[in-house]
Length: 327
Image 1 (cartoon, rainbow, N blue to C red):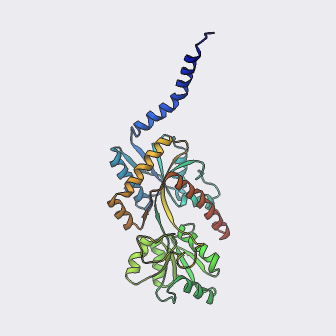
Image 2: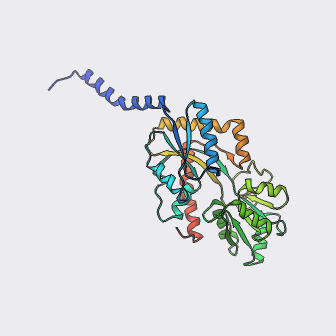
Image 3: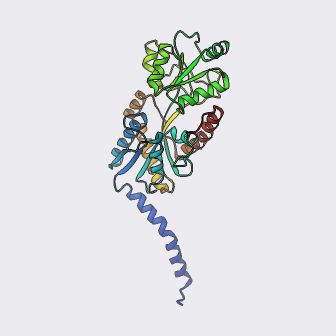
């Protein structure tokens, strides 16, 4: 056995311990060395896809590297999210998340991913509130008047949403469970058909997306009563929040954010967060997001992680209370 002097032994031991740190640091400094895949678990052309392409393009410009979108569709987003969960944690696969990321685990008997344990958060990019609108013939100018009208006419009124399990539906169920138990839910296959039904008076109340509602509001075909976000939205700045309207127990924001497979180097996550936040601060990006009905956020990774954990709990309770059965 070779006896090493103590000083030399300690030097070698320190070098060995530092080696992994140096390797990770070198990896982060050279990242990205090849194109980065941005997974969108929905078809091209939807809100999640458009936001992902805008941000991926801007981040690619900032870094001088290619960030490309790959649409992996199926299972209400579950197929793409499952594939992202199994991707290598090297920073070359990024998942674009929508609110279904925290809702689907409660809507399906099985999903191929765990939103908390299979991914590390990068940034909450944008949010989009839910707006409560009514047909102008309905005698309610604000939310308190709407509740009074519904309670005075049990079983008469219904509300439309973009579909079962959407954030507009779950916000509507929160409202129904807390304040209007006789309100009937009528699901549609998207935001536009649900708003059209309210314009026609078939379902006199609608919970939906501001971008869809805005032109109908401007034309006087719908009356907005409140938005479900904590702050007023840039899309409808004149419409009060639901808290301002006296109902602080309702939530209904949808979001688009980015996560990476768990174990992705922290330095890479920090770089991605920095560049995503920078992209959202660009004036042209803010303008484009406003036209989509989105409010730019650009959160820290820690803030997004806290929101994910919170919403997994919130929507699970709403789905259970509303007796929405898993598929």
